[in-house]
Length: 281
Image (cartoon, rainbow, N blue to C red; front, side):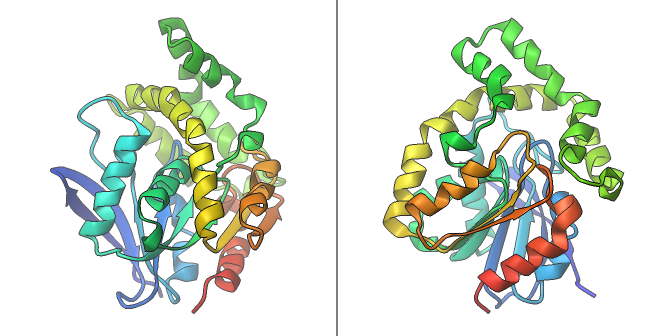
């Protein structure tokens, strides 16, 4: 049995909740979740890797059980908090698993501290324009015109039925998708203040796209070992975004799975096996 501990770190006066497993002297692995979920998205993956790695999976600020940000939420501020979090928990050198919002967070950390990153695992974590689907059109409209009308249009992404759709779309057998994940996400999304945080982040996502050339330059310069494990039926992040990593890191390993955006819901065992093959002991 894998012992998973549930802890809270104090980071610059704010609580960051996290899951932790594995031996303290094992190679370190930081798991960074995306929208609209939290560290619980790794509940099936952690036990499959904890014999090989010291794992921490924080809830990003404004998500899950972590505190809300004091002011407008931005990806730079999320990265600042997680950067400090890694120092608080003693993650001086680590591999990072990035998914969705976790990608621009983790890639910012890599650009800031290339010496700390031992490897990158990107699961539907995008860094290339060709990886963005037409599903981003309503959000792009808000980037171009941050009007109240365009902001309100994005509230559809926060509806409970949209969360369920994100989990089940692209899954060949939706009955394999547990309701536990999306039900918990919908609980978190319903908390006071969360909607405005999420709308702020939709607007700020344009800062991530603006940093794509910076992320790509980091890949070309440092060539970190990189594994892309991709749900090929993702409605938001397309397979060409996974293939593009090989343009900047020729040795990158790219694996596609017959899964949707939340590939871990149906393919945790297969993704864990790919990670075990990829990461050194």
